[in-house]
Amino acid sequence: MQTLAMDPTRNRLMPRLLIGVAALLTLLIVVAPLVYIFARAFGEGWKVYAANLMHPATVHAIWLTSIVALIVVPINVAFGIAAAWAVARFRFPGRSILVTAIEIPFSISPIIAGICYLLLYGRQGILGPWMQANDLQVMFALPGIVLVTMFVTAPFVAREVLPLMQAQGSEQEQAALTLGASGWQMFARVTLPNIRWALLYGAVLCTARAVGEFGGVSVVSGNIRGQTNTLPLHVELLFNDLNATGAFAAASVLTLLALVALVIKAVLEGRRGA
Image (cartoon, rainbow, N blue to C red; front, side, top):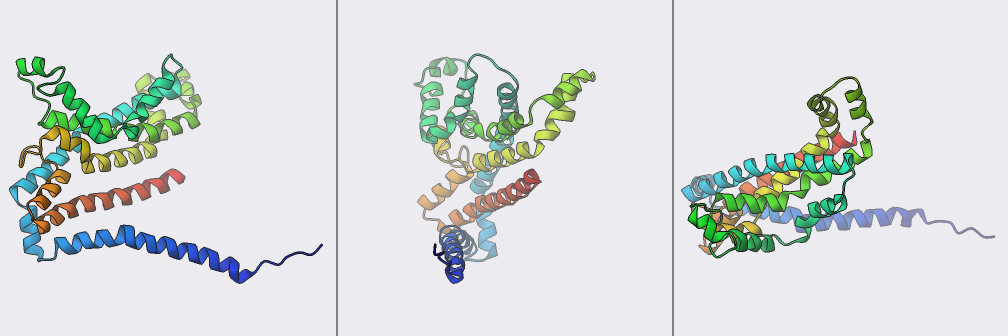
């Protein structure tokens, strides 16, 4: 039987070719747009860049986006822990339905979610007349933005924590209870340390998604300049006003937040691997 010898040159060529293609695509698809954003943002100098960022409408958009993230992320962290705990530690009717429900925001367009909230809480919606009679405003205000952002970002923490809790099992928690620990002591000293990196990882993803959400927020916010415009909506508004430099300046803030999230994500991935 004759054995065919492998060509070592060919073996080395294929990996290099694949690496080169991957690097080229990364440069074209990821790096080039990022460089272009900052080049346009600073194209007219630091003073113009700072003036665009300090414009009252831009400052309000940054403030509103931060407030939404500060409200949404802690709520979704609590929801993610509770949902993961229920699914991983208990068997109950409807458990599979709960797991499926957690994934629903990933399968529904954010714009569809925004329309659903509008048809539910809007003036002509199902609850609209009652809310108007009680002087409650959800749509075209902060509550509507928070609700649709919560919906869009709800799965991130649960998806990261649930597989880890299922893999770890409940033996350590049961041992803590046997030794006399209370439920809160068990959670604080056993459960939380075991899931901390997955929890932080999910929180970072949730924050990045909340800050960058556009579709659902555009439906429920009303796009009111200086009132209900989050930073992504404000970027679009500036482009529509033909203020490209201001739009790129605002976009640079979102880009910086995304880059920071990616760095934190990479660090947490390393921690989780360790």
